Length: 76
Image (cartoon, rainbow, N blue to C red):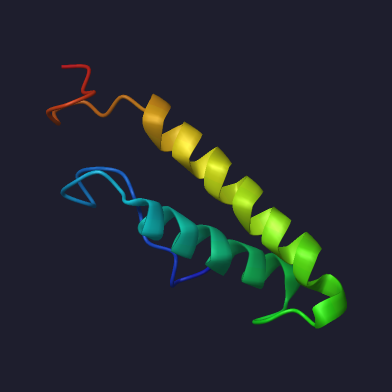
């Protein structure tokens, strides 16, 4: 979909994704879907809410994934 969104789960990312990693991915996603790199003032609030919602969903997803063969939350 968007080439600048990177995989945030191990082993693609050696450590846990940071809040900054998650926010950057969410921002790229919302930019791609909306077609706006930066929204106009009248769209800023809904754009920012969408980024926050995607970031929350991403953090929830990453927090719940079990990655086999990786220490931490791994299911060996």
